[in-house]
Image (cartoon, rainbow over all chains, first blue to last red; front, side, top):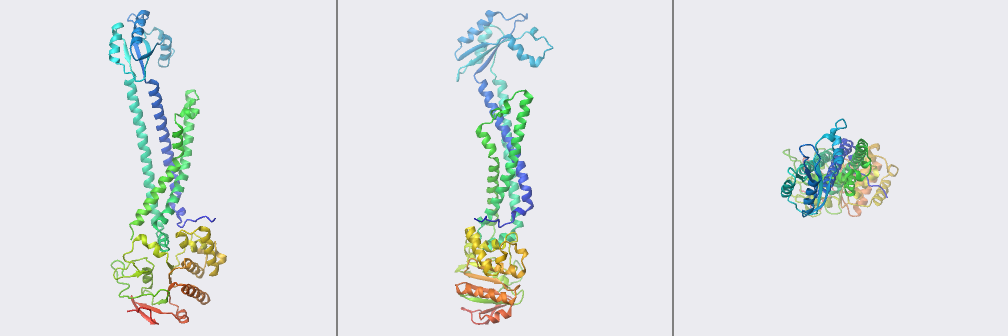
Length: 298
Length: 219
């Protein structure tokens, strides 16, 4: 079967040389932005799941610098175990606390001399609502100065910031899409002007507007999906190399696996479909542009 | 008929072509022959008066109705209007392709027609590499490929020698015998003299008859 030729010489237009590169760049930026948004969303979900139902009780060290008397700790633990909704209570040993501080203080300071508070990790039952204010008051009655940290205060701010970044990313993808649409409208209008004579001839031999639109839309689809595939490929290389660099920087290899990026299978599919999405957007934009302009003619 | 605020190019023309008729249209350059043709192949609308084609008033037809009517009209343009990025066979196949014809069938039919007009060895070349006469034959093949109900040819023999011109006129006659109404705008008096068909003479935008009567008269 013979291949249907283009009746309009759109491939020869100057815009045909520039459009795939432009769309490639747009898809590159959109893919990177989308990937970062997906990674951040996944990270938020992981932090949220990890810290949900978790509290920390902080028992201050005695002012004289001595160790917390065991009976005081036992009293606190007993009170916590009796509190409804608490499922596990685990005091952190002093060595583990020093280990936590090591990255901040370094090895040159003798941190064993520091009067560290005793920390108790608490996990609560799913859906239980513990009044942390009341619990803090009860604990303070047993050991004055004891406080309850809910993580909500600092996590809330962190989540808000992260979600704002995700929203900004989605907005940026939207802007990139709008930029691509405007470019396709511009190149389509230019094509209509350049090929005015050929389009008139097509009409005179009986072509409908939709026939002319098909010429533009299939050309736009090929250009955008081709450029998009290039942009997406480049973006995936950037993501993989970025992930590897981050993994090597941390001395781990978590980022070397797909799961390490924190992007789900659906997320990866969305990224891989970017060139098709770019092609479809270009196709629809070119079609609507051609039909609306030709439709205004007599 | 006038363009913008310019002078009237055609005026007070009362013309009716009988279906299946064969007509020559003559007149000096600038008399309005091409404008009359443009009205007939629906490239322009009349600025006043009434014109109808296949029983439809062309002043009031909608844009979506035009393709259907245009597919019943074959046009040979004075400047050929061939697409130089397509091969000759694809140029000839164009009217059938836009009508949704199958590519393989359309191309073989177009190739057959090109062989008939003596261009069988130029199927896959670009029109720009052909001589003026050859391009004209490609344009004629494109105009007749749909076996149109109305064939309008603007100087279709202007770039060919007499032998080819007569052969082309015989092709038009053959189409005419199959029921196509033919109107040929030409300056070629020898051709007009050789074929005994009604002659419409256009001068300064006014139409007159110089040979034989046209069915419903010219006034």
